[in-house]
Image (cartoon, rainbow over all chains, first blue to last red; front, side, top):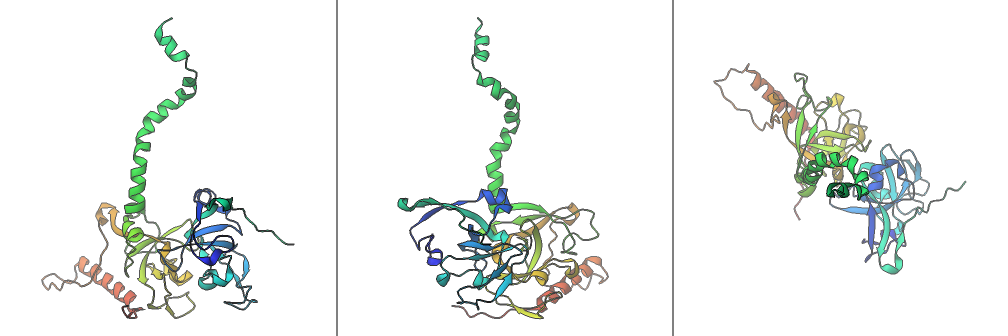
Length: 132
Length: 216
């Protein structure tokens, strides 16, 4: 892993994570809001990025609650076959706020666990809670 | 007791494996060849059947009874990342991740394209890392005129040649010029088809303005 866009969940460098390629192939419907996913970059065919799924197709997503890249009142409808992804470190992340919704076909895998450094080993769970 | 009776009956796990034995014997060759076939089809070349009208008359013309079967090159896209205008490529649909589309790359990042209906803007500048793809048959085609420029990462492989039906073997006409052979009568059908293909290519290329990019 490298890059500060997923702090504090993932450190900027020096971590080794395990990705799970099989569960999305076997059950594509298991993609949920709040999952950490690895995606082939929509703006660079050689790069892969790791972000969190915020919106599934059909959701209305607030583009940027921090107001950095778009006014915080702006909302967007995620089109069919696309997801809205966002880095956990919203101040230093290039994600759907910059390049728009990402086609689901570009998703490579889900992040399963962090293995190194050993003191921080953890299996990633989906932290999303629905507020009524 | 006879040694042969001892042989079978004193190994209880034989009863569990026995029903599967004929299966593994015949499918051993499948298991043996699977890694090779997988690596060749994922990293080098694979075969796809092209269905639909969106690439007519280049692929699946009405004159043919069969759907075209094409040989696709994965190495050029996956490893070399060679994207050229005018290539017919197979890509995952941005609208439906389970569908594979076969279309032509008309423009790459930085080019200006005059779009066709139903695209809302008349002219578009293709953003970085994306490509403008179109089917050769604009009316029946599910392409960038509907969903906009597609990321280059969605493109999977490039069409090399048509392998079936035999009468259309190799048919990927790339007319850059037409032989000005004055001895051949101009009513010859091959000449007419070649001229038609050239006309279509010119029409496609006229709608794309390649903005010259300064070299670093």
